[in-house]
Every structure is written in C-alpha cells, then in structure tokens.
Amino acid sequence: MKGENTRKLIVDVATGLFAVNGVRATTMEAIATAAGRGRRTVYMYFRDKAEIYNVVVDREILHICKALKDVMVKDGDCSEVLREYAHERYNLINSLLRRNPLLVRDFVQSHNRIERLRERLNKEELKTMIPWFKKAIKAGSVRSDKPADVLAVTFMNLLRGNDRILTVKNNHEQAVILIDAACDIFIKGAL
Image 1 (cartoon, helix red, strand yellow):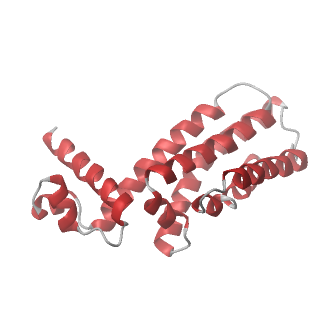
Image 2 (tube, one colour):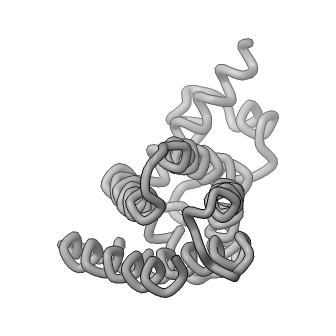
C-alpha cells in the first residue's frame, strides 16, 4: 500500500509540475523535490520522465473514456447519443485544457511521441464506439451499409479533426459550431 501511495504521489506531483512548467522544463529532480522524496525513490518507481508523462496521460485518457462510455450506454435516438458524445468529448478535453494547458498543448501537437498518445486515446474511444455502432446496426436504429468499425472510425476522425482548435483561447463558439457540423455531416451522410 505504501508503494502505491508513493507512486500516486509522484504522478500527482508530476501532473502539477507538467501543468505549470511543461514537460520539457520539468526534471526528475524537480519531481522528487516537490514530492518530498529523493531522486532514487522516484527512479525506483519510474525509469524516466517519459514514463511518468505516459502515466499522467493514461490517467487523463481513462478519465475521458470513462465519461464517454457513460454517454454511450444511454438509451435514445442514435443522433442524440452521437451529438451528446461529441459535446461531452469536447467538454472533457476543454476541462483538461483548463486544468493542464501545457500538457494539452503537447498532447494535441503532432510530435511523434504526442501522436502516439493521441492514438492511444483514439484506440480507447473506438473500444466504446465500435460496439455501440454494432448494437445500433443490429437494432436497426442505424441503417448504414457500412460496417460498425468504419462508421466509428469515420465519426471519430470528424471529431478529432477539431481537436487542435481547443488549444486556441476563446474558441468555444467556433469549436461548438465545428462539432455540430461534424455531427450533422456524419448523421445525415451515414445514418
């Protein structure tokens, strides 16, 4: 239990430091000092800063995906569920941006490491979307001749295309317009 608490402490402290200083400017020494632990202790739990960063991002991805899964289990008209999903996704990412703007800026940029992390979020989202589309097709509420995985990937790509706009300040209205347009295009064209 003590080890889990220390690991969680390190991740929590690193999350705060990444938010304030950015990933590049945060050192393992700074994480150890802020956690009130020695550098050796931090290295006992994590081999490097990149591993801590991955745990921080994984935690954010799990938080986002859990909330999105909650939307997808709701009963209702398919178009309403997809719109709610799109808006909830926007709200969750926007909330992350407000809590941790430097992490999100790193997260939505196209660097190879960051792109791999974005792909992890996409992969987790598809684990929810594909079964939902399969169920909707089977129930007859989605009348597309396209398979569930194609519909899920297409819908997610429409939403992901708007992710970068979230890093620009005061773009809430434009982001909502683009999300609604993505939903309209998908719903009218695929459902």
